Length: 301
Image (cartoon, rainbow, N blue to C red; front, side, top):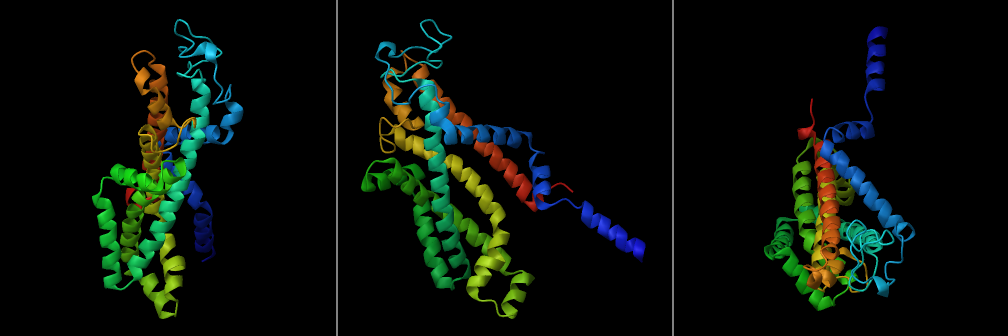
């Protein structure tokens, strides 16, 4: 008897914690680990960009307008990635621009996820007629192309980075509503919810304390993917002149300012485009790793 108890205690002691288990499955995906490292660099640049950048992002060097990168003829190591049409240092603007992109992702995901989770919980627990009304509204929003709807909303609110973030959050919210509602309906049928209802748990407690924690795994994955979508949409709105306004060093706005110089100064378009590409790819890879680590069906036995 004592041997059995000691063996059971040893098994419990050896069982990995949730964080360790999460990291075990996450690191199985090599691409996700690479994406995590790139995202970490991106976050550091966003937090400390103004102190890391070699120059002020808005400072104009009139004697070095459209100077090529350092390795190309005519370039200097004072401006490693060259300068833009106004003589501003490209490397400094890219580093500081990471702050705006990171800020857009954080704000958009926070607004979209918070609103979407609340509406999804209400829809999952509400009477059928309320659920039908909510879901039909979400279907109407999803029927519009996301970028077109964001453009319309920004045109109504006025072009600015703040209004662009609000528009993108509204566009992304239906995805969270549908995902949360589906998870809630699935969880409501399980025994632990029935037990909580039998012992007298209120509807609010069932929603927030009992059901919601078990619905978070797919929502976290969706949040990671929405982060990259928000960066892309903000860059697209900036490129169209409806997002961040000059001289803000936002990557999409940098592309918009440089589009007429594509043929004579390749670096003013290439580097902001690469920054968007690498960041979005890293976040998507990290999202795949989160899905593998959080979805029990994908875990290896």
